[in-house]
Image (tube, rainbow over all chains, first blue to last red; front, top):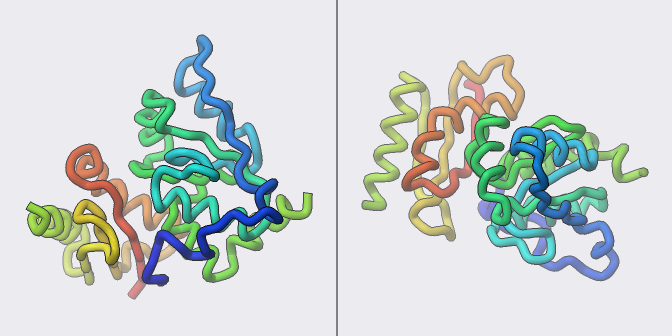
Length: 136
Length: 78
C-alpha cells in the first residue's frame, strides 16, 4: 500500500492530458427527484467520478488523486461536483452504501472509493478494467 | 479528543471483527479526523474488493456523519 493516498501519480495535469481530464457533468436540478438524478448521472458516461470539486479544481486530496489516476491512464471520464448538490451528496451515500467521496462508477456500477482505485491501479487491474474506454 | 476517535473506531471495528487482526491509527500527513484502518479477517473470503471495503464502511457509516472525515482502508485475508 502506498504511503501517500493523496498523490499516487503526480500532481500536474499537463497540456497533453488536459483534454482527457474529467469533463464535468453540470449540476442540474430541474423537477426530477434526487434518485432519478443519481441514475441519470451514473449513466452519463462509462466512467463517472462523484467528487468534491472537479478535475481542475479538486476540493479534496482523495478526489484529486482519483481523477489524477484516470487522467494518467488517459481514459475519458466525467465528474460530478457533490459540493454543489447537497441533496444528492446525502442520498448517494444510501444509494451506494458508501459514506465518503470520491465514488467511482464504471458502466453504471460502483467500483469504489480512492483506496480501491489506488489498489486496483497498483495491481494493474484498473488499467484492464478501463482498457476499452481508453481505446474509444 | 483526537485519541478518542481512534479508540472509538478501533473498539467499534473490533466488536464486529471479533478475534481478527484490527489496526486503527492516524493517517500519515493528514488531520486527526483521517484514519488508517487495516483488517485481516476470514470474513473477507470470497468477497470482491468493493464488498470488503463496503463491509468496513458500513460499520463506520454513523461515524462519518459525526467526527470522522476519511479512512484509508486495507483489507486482507488470513
